[in-house]
Length: 204
Ligand SMILES: [Zn+2]
Image (tube, rainbow, N blue to C red; front, side, top):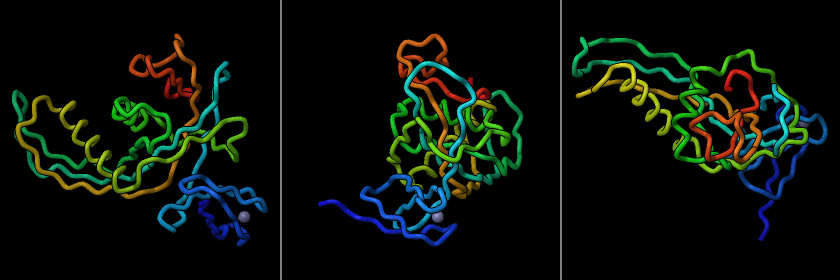
């Protein structure tokens, strides 16, 4: 059975019907993209390609979280204890699609440190294909917390103990452009076997 979904465009009030769950809907009247998850509309942003390459164009969805975290106390080996407020910061967590799960944390680290706010927004996917969203927001938040801890371990050496407060607020679903080029020389070293080449200059 095909499940029909009908939602109202937040920009112009038109009805949007779709046959699929967990996909981006496009309003035929005004061109707005929206995404519905568990019956709720969530904001979506599509980033434009900044590099021209030969390869299959895809947009991979990432959850953008505004993270506020605070280190309450820690004990580590070889370093003086440090206290610090870590937020607010933007974290970008792969939301599924074809992105290889084992590279997700490395890419999330790269995106969270290098993705600038000056990236250009696209108004459509154009000749690119959006990948489906495969994890939900609570799961994305768990990954964001894992990334936060990963950052602390990297910064501080061997952590024996850490207590912290962590809060990730979902901001938007961000579609980051990629080329799929197997065995490309331009692939980031940790993405090498996967063949995904970021279509943004800052993520080269
Ligand atoms: Zn509309």
